[in-house]
Image (cartoon, rainbow, N blue to C red):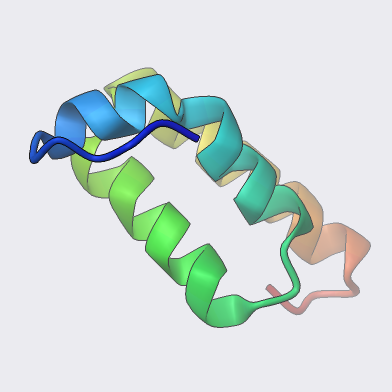
Length: 66
């Protein structure tokens, strides 16, 4: 993960894969919430469609709990 220089859009762009990995694999709901918030607020629009798909899949695999 790269350092933060004050530009949140640049941070999300440079750390997109790490943030997605956090969403998919972290057990910490707070940390997942931070990653999701950063991706939603500062990520590109196509990313939102991918996130929605991944969250739906995770909810379905978890038995309806996201």
